[in-house]
Image 1 (cartoon, rainbow, N blue to C red):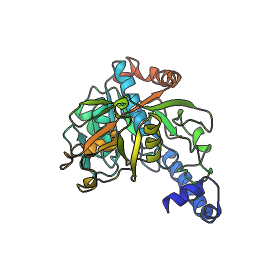
Image 2: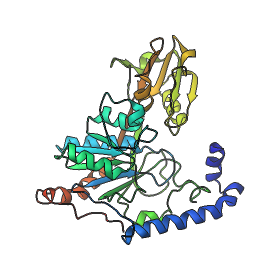
Image 3: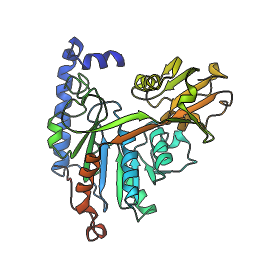
Image 4: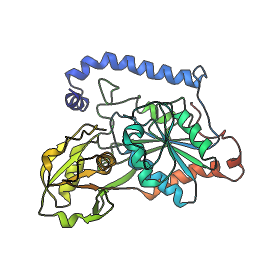
Length: 347
């Protein structure tokens, strides 16, 4: 059913037309909710540090988490202390939790675990992102900037900079859920506080910055050892991916000259079980970094040669220049000591 809906989204087909009235109601609800936050009828919390929210206007993954990691590394390279907050999709529990290297992935969520592993920044998760941010600042008061992984529609947390990420789907058929892929009206949403748009695909559907995505030259094993992708050429390989678009990962592997004897597409945030890979003993299995944060800690995988292939995500320099320009007045020595009253209010 999910695949059928995705196909319909692209063509405004008969099913989309049937669902159009529901989408119209959804649109009214979205607009009403935003109006209630604007008018102060629903509470929205502001914090003393600049908050950057990275999210999607379109349902499904588009490169949001890789962008969060790229942002954190960019800001860290400038000497800023950066923290990350997230809902921790798919995790067990609702309370605020700091994600540490030893935190089980089922308690943190796979994406927060990956962000922690890739950046070393403080990462906190909670059902309410404002609660996670409060815990982050209490534990790390020197934090200068906070990046929120997802949460573009979470207006209970005020933000200073909003970034929307799109892939080659663009806005699909342009209709709201469930008749289309949009979570919010577009292009209406673009003029309601959105600061930056980043396209991660090959064919941007409209104006915005772009980012290249390619596989790293080496795959990484659970013990940290590395294998050059070129050394894997000519071998029969198994590839799996529990991400929004598994076929994209498989295509990138093939483009590097690898022979995929079998591919295993899995749902995004797939909950791996111990028996999932028992049929591949003795084989080399390639996976994404997001899958690896779960698989590397699972027992019973010693009989596999499991390798994670990292993704190199590189937004164009002009994107970072635009971000730095937005952040500059917020990070001045004078304002950094005061409660943040600048930037995006829910308007």
